[in-house]
Length: 555
Image 1 (tube, rainbow, N blue to C red):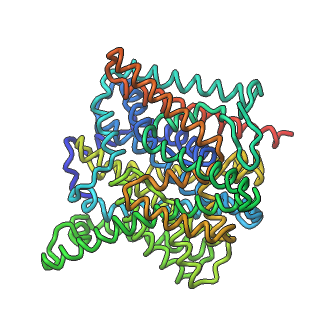
Image 2 (image 1 turned 90 degrees about the vertical axis):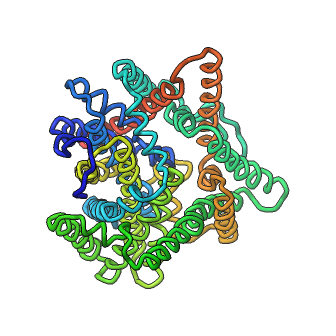
Image 3 (image 1 turned 45 degrees about the vertical axis):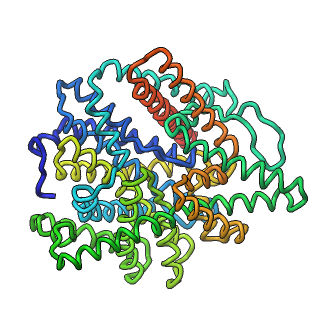
């Protein structure tokens, strides 16, 4: 971290104004990310959104440095992946009826442990996976291009905040005032939740993901709902309830198989090449961890060591998992964060909950950890991997525009630590407002990934379906197809997949209209508006939940 290679002092890039803006933004983005992850079963990267907001707000203070804007957006976005790691694991405890066995203190320990490990791991692997690798990091590259291309801050800001306001008003009319239904165009198809989700946010998810990935997402929904549930039941192969168990198991297997595919196709061959290269170089390759560590100051090495020790103690004592499990979690966190960096670098996708499941299963194989403690293990690793994916993408952005790695890492630490508190507070707020019954498939918060973790802990409805999905996910990923998206379509309620497909359709129409009219920067404009819609509904959703909690306490 010592050698910045930046165009300006790292202290100038990490300015007090930028930190203040970043912290305020971090609270908002983290809160909305918890809501989005639970509601949508997915968490779109907020980096482009925060890049635009940071640049726009800094210009209001007369500051126009792209590097300062990059560090500010890093502070803003860091907590979102902490939120994702928690939202993708912890609600599974409530789904199993074990809410009385977890407290907000333990949730905070999970978030803090994962955050510390994620920060340490990325400091250790940055040089190898950013400076010396050819990984593209599509999200980080897109953020850099956004910062360099966004020269018209006023116009862009109006689009962004205008779309946020409209989406927020829509959410208020639907959820607070009850003027609109949540689902429209419903059809009574046994076992299939056929409808259009009245959610600008879900349309925006489809718009932002778009194209081939959403096509596979919707194909998975068709296979699961109309192929297995409707078709299989009509053919007399099984009843509707059995079919639903098969579909959920198949979807979980596909998502987990996608994560395994990343390991088999990308991580292990890459690790083998690195080892062969080190042997050939006689252990003198500058890309090794040793050479990276040698460039750190004594204070930096000591700080990282203390962070690892603190994380291990939190897992050992704070979560009651014991010293052996704590050591295993710490060691495997390093392995899985490398997997996360590789996955994000190549695809822009970070299956953080899958990495958490891998470590969960490893711990379950040799320890007597309780079900709740296994969720804690998955949560720690998911937070670490989520943060690692975010940090490495941000490092890639910085490498392109010349931001100091030290300033970026410090910004990540500030945002991530603040995000741990905010994410836990929002989770507790949503639980208090809506109760444990609001989490799970077909409920207000679908919590798809947490449901997968809960099923792995408590038992799979259809083992054959899961095995077929696991093998199919590996095969699809190996073939270069979006296995994760296909599995998400199989698993999620049909109305969510249909609405996302409609959002992708809107993008297709929009792009063709813009092309016919010769509109410049149409893609950038569309992304800005869709990002604003995504953030607007999420923020208002959290505010409504918080209002419900306050009203309940006052009553």
